[in-house]
Image (cartoon, rainbow, N blue to C red; front, side):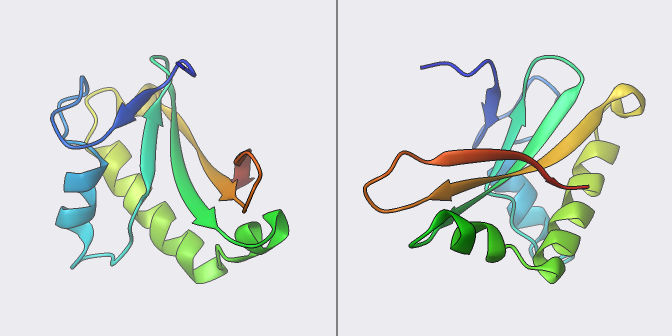
Length: 112
């Protein structure tokens, strides 16, 4: 099933930057933040997605603390700055909540 996004993972992306795996390796000692998934719609919007498995949807959303959001945001800004077309890009921070015996729920623009 295609959601209209390119998933960045191991390997080189169209944007000339290795995927989320390399991003996390490079930054692990610098910002100590991990980005679960980086999505590119093929346009000018990049989604940085945090995936949380918890007993409830609210618990998953609450588990992304203020401090975690700060670290993820710094990591995202570093990644955006490395893109050739960074001046025209916009981005958002999403959370996918994974709960037992339910379909995952994708929350867009959870923080700015």
